[in-house]
Length: 105
Image (cartoon, rainbow, N blue to C red; front, side, top):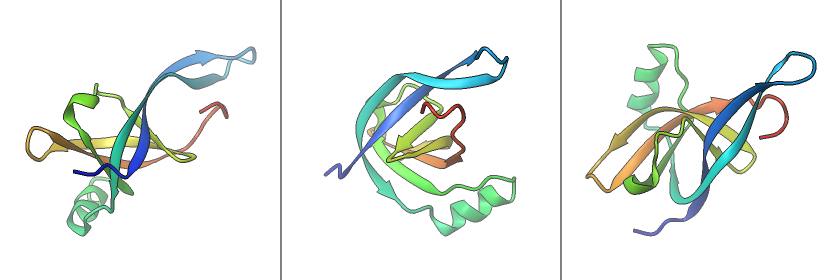
């Protein structure tokens, strides 16, 4: 299988700045090869029924994923809504857009 895209798997760390505001940083970033896919229509409507808005699906190798809750693709950070393994080797990460906070992502 060809891996056409590169994503970063993110593990956020929350802290407070001098104003007492909570900020998130991503000191633990893992760059992996992936395939970007569109969200299937059925997936979109099932998620919308429970208030979620999946926007992107990334396929990665199962061995690469360590339960990271966020993914960066380009300049956008996505929240991992759910994962699904097709065959024990390839894992789909169903993601929704995650607003950047603190400007340091």
